Length: 346
Image 1: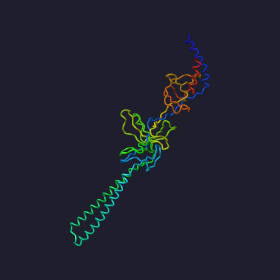
Image 2: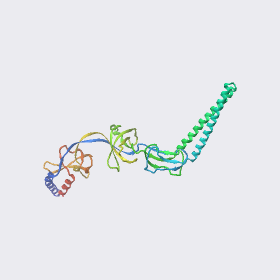
Image 3: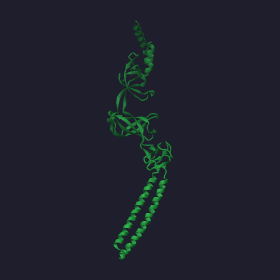
Image 4: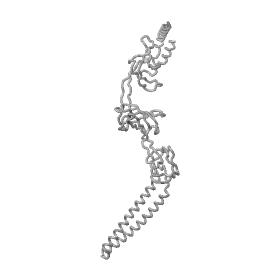
């Protein structure tokens, strides 16, 4: 008897709701176009980065820039002690001066012996010795010049300069430390030319190619950015079964290296049916909408939802994969109808 009463009152509730449903806002199921895109996640990488290291054994005497400082190509980012090399350069300069003086003397002697030999006053052997001495003096000058240039080059290594425009990411040494050749000093990276390196499942790779436009969103950064696929690494990760796709970010993107983001690479569209996102009701493990019946009463219809086109708060659309036909009237405020039905059935 209790079950019959509940059925009776439920029928009464639906009858009472019929006029309300007729007055409620309804909207027909609409045919729309769903943009299709390959979606993947990745990490922001700089267009260029470099770890600048010491090339000579010397103590660090200056690190003028802190993390985040902007640099131009050629700016000093680290300086090493060069007193010993200054002394070596002075010795090399003196040695070069001595060899040049010796070459001048050898050339004068060679000219004198050559003149004597022309008059028959010097032997061929004497002329050969003078020529040999001049050649050896010239070689000594060349060696001294090379030695001086080597010291100059090593002296230049004590001034570590930025190879490109960018910013200091991290200082890897401190003033006073002894740096051996290869010791990292400073890491810098470019500001422009950033890329999102996304891991794209191999099943989606047939839809991705270099040159396709893309849209990037980065966690913690408002809005989205335009981009373009620039490179595809031609080897899959054997464990994750993904390919690395590199997407260049628009120059106006204010993001930083290491930030996590998502990329959508559009490749087409397909026709779909949609309803207002607010019409969808999720109850327990089922999803449905309320359809206005022939008598105006709301009828709960099970549906299979698909993608959400936009933000639910902005009044956007919910794709319906099954359960509805184009043109059927659905009640826009599904939650309100569900609450009214539940209240009336008590």
